[in-house]
Length: 439
Image (cartoon, rainbow, N blue to C red; front, side, top):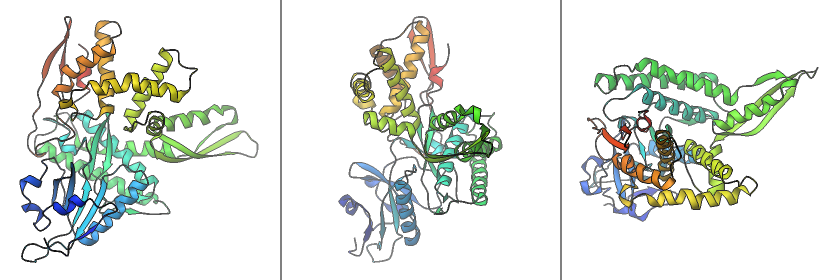
């Protein structure tokens, strides 16, 4: 490898020097390559092993690599869900001294998947809608901070399961631009139209390949991002007027915003000259209301919906055991030690790559509820854990390191698993909605 290799990184990993930068990316040996599914990209992208984790390497131009690297770092500082930039590598040359393309290196987001890998054999309408809703929320968050994406699509997004929904993460910031003064309505509408058209094209492409359910309408699903986006944008940024006798609506608005996962930085409240009408205008800060509360109470870092689910269980624990008068932090520590951590420790080592711990706990709670409905009484936690591990978790594919191409057929299995002597559940291991089927 030539000594002129240049690495730009905030925290350079010495292991980067061990990768074969003297070879074109397409010629890298299998020993360096991690077989993970990837989305469609205009550039050559490959995954590689690096010191115990996986990185994505994209060949591009030096200018574009540096620009995207800095943009991703900025988005991370603003707490936008996106991939973590690792390094920009330029001045690559082969053994003959001929120049090779510069690359952008980003860290692979564990337990995340491109949209093409999120369905087993056919993409169903409800799954497609959840993906689009997650992307709409991501787009709103980006627009709130003044970021124009310019290439909104499912392909430029990674998705992680988040307590029955999906959380979307920006992957490709190549075309993005951050405006300090915020975006105009025209810029927002332009991004929204790009999203609508791109999503329709991606779903129509899947339809042409026979990869979507017959009842899925690509155009209707893609139009759904417009409705989801505008509803969210109005709730997060719109002003509201009401009679001064209805001041309770101020707290109601704050509660709705918190339920969406957003905190309020400030709330502008104005009354008219007669004092009969109140007008409120919220200034919303970044999403993560439940994430921040869970992290503060327990130290657990989870997705927003996962955090909401875990906090609900924590609050239920506090109420069930008569601990409402105790300090919240003390009860949270007790719940962590007596409930959450024993569940995580009970997962066999070979199954811990299936799902991240917070998602496992959420699914366990759903499974325990299902078993209780079947039995007509509460199910002990230990019994629910054993049932969940053996009838659900063992049949899932690993989402920490999913192997296989995303463009070919990805098969699934249907397991008929007896839960007790009076009921049988049909479980699709790739969709948590299915193992909640009523029997």
